[in-house]
Length: 548
Ligand code: ADP
Ligand code: MG
Image (cartoon, rainbow, N blue to C red; front, side, top):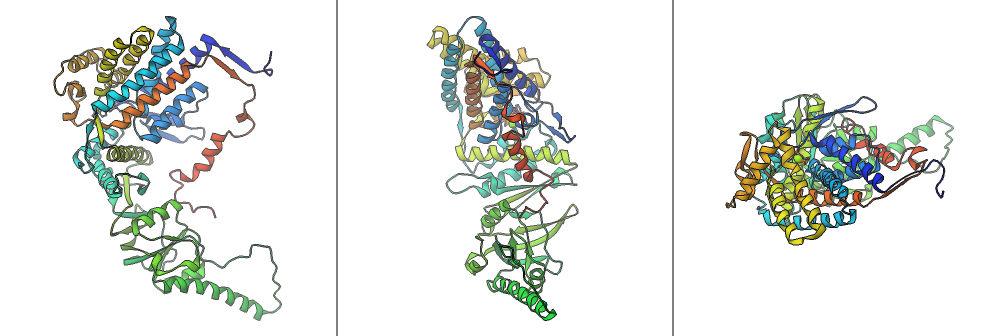
C-alpha cells in the first residue's frame, strides 16, 4: 500500500469502462437538443433559478458534473464555445460516439493505443477533407452570412423573428469588422429588455448604456455631443491615511466646507473648459459636482462599466482619461446624439449617430426573462458564427451533409491504411454518422432510412451530391446549399478535432487514482471561486454599480 487510507484506485478495463460510460452519459444528456428539431432542457439550480435552453455548452455548464471523465467532455464543449461559439452539442455528441465505438474495438482486443493512433490519423485526414469541402465566401456576401446566422439560431426559440434577428446580427458584425477582416464580437453589445415582442428588437449604430443621468437638471438630449470618458472620481479627494482635523469654531468649519467645494469646482471647471458636453464617468460623481455640471448644461453618467467605457471609446473615438489633470479637448470623442430614453420603464442612455460606429448595440426584446435569456444565447451564437465566417471566409453545408461526406471519404482512406489502424479509422468514420442520425431521430424521422438515403445521395457523384443533408420541411434529403443550411467551416473542423482529442485522452487512461480528501472539499474549489467572482456579469445584476 503506497496510497493514503481512503484513496481509491481503479485500473485497466474497469477504469476505461467507467470513464467511457461517464463520457457517454454526458453525450447522451445533450443529444436530444441537437438540430433544428431538438428539444430544450429546463435546468433548476440549488436556489431554484430556472434556465431553459437548447445550447449544449449552457446545459453542461449548469449541470453539476462530478466524474472526472465527464468533466473532460464539458471541457470539449467549452473549447468549442470559446473557439467558434457554436457546434458545442455536435462536438460532445461526436466525442461520446467515438468512445462508444472504441468500446467495441476494445472488446475485440484492439489495444487502446492502436485505437488512439487510428483516431488521430482519422481526425487529421478529416481536416483535409473538410477544407476540401469548404466553399469560399466574401466578407460582403450579406445574403450568405444571413443564412449562416439563421442556421446557427434555428431551433433556439427564435423562429418567429429569425430573419429580422439575423439581419441585425449581420449588420452589426459587418459594422464592427476591422479592415483586416478580424471581428471582435465584444464590440457588439447585447442588451436584453423584457416586455415587447421579439420583432421589436433593434440595432443601434452606437452604444446603449443601462444607466441614467446623475441629476434631473441635466439635459435629456445633447446633439453634436462632445464626449469625455473619465476614469477618475469627480469627488473630493479623501486622505489615504487616517487623519483627524480638529475644528474649534463654526468659522473654521465653514472654511473647511468652502475649501472642499472649491476643489470640486476646480475639477468641474476643468471638465467644462475642455468643451465636453457629455461625461461618462467610470467612478462616482459628487453631489456638488452634479449640481455644477447640471448648471453648465452638461449631461453626466456615473459608474459606467469598464467594458462599456471601452466600447464607448471605440464608438465615439474618445480616449479614456484616467486623471483629472489630463483632461484636454484632444481626448474627447463625438456623437451626433446622446439621449436618455425609456425602454420598458427603465431609463437608458443612447449614444448614436457616431461618424464611424466601430461598436454597436443590439436591444433584444421578448415576452419573459427566460425568452430573452435564450434569445441572447442564440444571438451570441449567431454573432460568433458570422464573425468566424467573415474571418475565415469559408463555409460548409450543414444538415448532416459534411458528416456523411467525411464518413464516406474516411472509409476510403481507411482501406488505404490497412492493419489494425484501419479498424479504428473505420470506427471514426461510423461515429461521425451520429450527427445526421441524431438530427433525424430528434425530428421523428427514421434514422436508418435517412442514413441510407443520405449515403446513396452522396455516392451518386453529381456536382452537388456532397452537399446533400436532411431537409426537415420535406423529411427527405436535399441540397443543403440550395436550402440555405450553411455553417462556418471552423464549426466542423473544431468539433472534429476537439472531439477526437478528448476521446483519445480518455481512451489512453488505464489507471484512475483518486485521493480521499480532494482539495475542493475544505472550501470552494478554484472553479467555484471563479464562478463567484464572475457573478457581476450575470444578467439581472447588470444594473448594479461596480464596486469601488
Ligand atoms: P450545436 O450545439 O452543435 O450547434 P445545434 O442544436 O445548433 O447544435 O444543431 C446544429 C446542427 O443542426 C448542425 O448539424 C446543423 O447543420 C443542423 N441544422 C441547423 N439548421 C438546420 C436546418 N434548417 N436544416 C437541417 N439541419 C439544420
Ligand atoms: Mg448551433
